[in-house]
Length: 563
Image 1 (cartoon, rainbow, N blue to C red):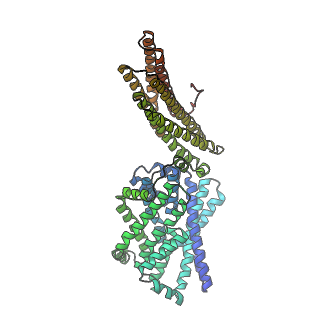
Image 2: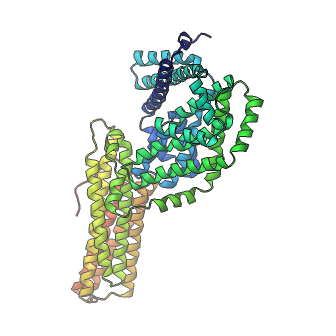
Image 3: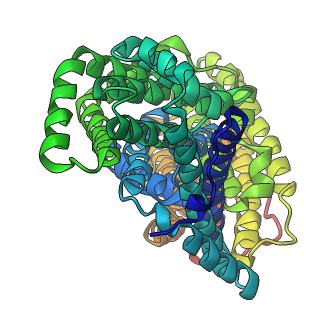
C-alpha cells in the first residue's frame, strides 16, 4: 500500500534529524491533542468519576486504568489525582490505587501501536477535520480532535520510522548502537532520561517499538533484553511529570507524587532482578506467536510488567502509604490544612469539584461542632475549667472554618454555573452558618454552666439524668445532621425532622417541670440557668433541622433567624 511517507526519502543527516525531531513532535502533539479532546468530551465528569469511584483500592485500580485508557496518559490521570488529593476529595490510600491502575491503562497506547494501523493515519486526520469543521456540537468537535490526535500519533511514528531506517547504514549510528547493545544498564538509563525529557512514557515506548522493529528487520540495533531494560527505565522516567505537577502543591499532593515514584521504582527493581527470565519469556512469545510483529512483543511485555507489579504491590498498599507519610509527614496547621483543600484553580476550571472540596471541609466543620458540643456536655457533668479552654479553642476553629469556606464559596463565579450548582452553593453557605450558630449555642451552654458552678448551685440526681438524656438526644441529632449533609441522605433528613419534634416536646416538658419546681419552692430562682440550657439545646436542634430541610427540599432555603 502506497503511504504518504513513501513519497519522501530523507538521505542527508540534516534531513534525517528533521524527520526524527518532527516525527517526535507530531507524535507528542497527537497524544496531547487526544488527551485534551477526551477531557473536553468528558468534562468535569472525568474528575468527578475518579473522586466518586475510588472507595476501595480495587475500585481505584479499575478507575485509574479506565480513565487512562480514555485519556491516553497515565501522567494526566496522576496529575488529576494530585489535584483531587490537594482539594481534599481523595486520601492517599485511594490515590495509590488510581496510580496503580493508571500504570496499567497507559499500556493501551503501545498496544494500539502494535496493531500496525499507521497506514490509515491520514484517514483518521481527514475524518477528524470534517467533524471539527462541519459540526457545531462540542462533543462532536471533541471527537474530531480525538481522531486527529490519533492520526497524528501514527503519522509521527511513520516519520521517525522512515528516518531511523535510513540511519541504519550510518557508521556513526552503528558505532553508537554497538556501545549500548547488550548493556541493559545503559538501556535503563536511556529510558529514564528520554522519558523524563519528553514527559510521556507512551511516546518513549512508542519510539522503542519503532526502533526495536527496525533492529529486528535489519539485524542492526538493540536486543530484546536491551529493549526491556529501556522499558523499565521509561516507567521510572514517567514519574517526572507528576513530580513537577506537585511542586508548589500541598503536602498531600507531594505524598501522591512520591507514592507514584516509589511504585514505579519498586516495580522496575523487582523486574530488574528477574530481567533474564523476563527476557526469555518474551523471546519465546515473539518466536512462537509474534514473529512478524516485534512492536506487539514490546506492547505485551509492557502490559505484563505493569499488571504483575500491580498484583504484587496490591498487598502492600498500606505499607507504601505509611512509608510515604513517614517520609513526608502531614502538616498540623489548620490554616495550611484548609488552604490546601480549597483550590482557587478549581473555582474557574471545575466549580463542581470546588463545591465538593468545600463540602468535605463543611463535614469537617460539623465534626468540630459535634466535638465542641460534647465538651459542653462533659462540662455539665464535671466542674473542670479545662473544658472552658477546650471550648474556646474549638470555637476559634469553627469560626475559622466558617470564614474561609464562606469566602471561598462567595468567590465562586456564578455566571456560567448550572442552576443546580448555584443552588448547592447557597445551601452550603446556609449550612456553615447553621454549624457556626450551633457553636455559638455551645459557648452559651458553657457560660451558663460556669455561672452555676461559680454560684455553687447543685443539681439533683434525677434532674441530671433528665438533662443527660436531653444532651444525648441532641448529640444524636448533630451526628445525624453531619451524615445527612455528607451523604445527601433523605432518610437521615427525615430522621432529623422526626427527632426535632421529640426534642421540642422534651424541651417544653422540662421547661414546665422547672417552673413547677421553682413555684413549689424546691428550686431557687437562680436555677433559671437550667431553663436557659434547655433553650440552647432546643435551638441547636433547630439548626440541625434547617440543614436537614435543605436536603429534603433544596428550594426551602433559610428563613429569618430565630436567635
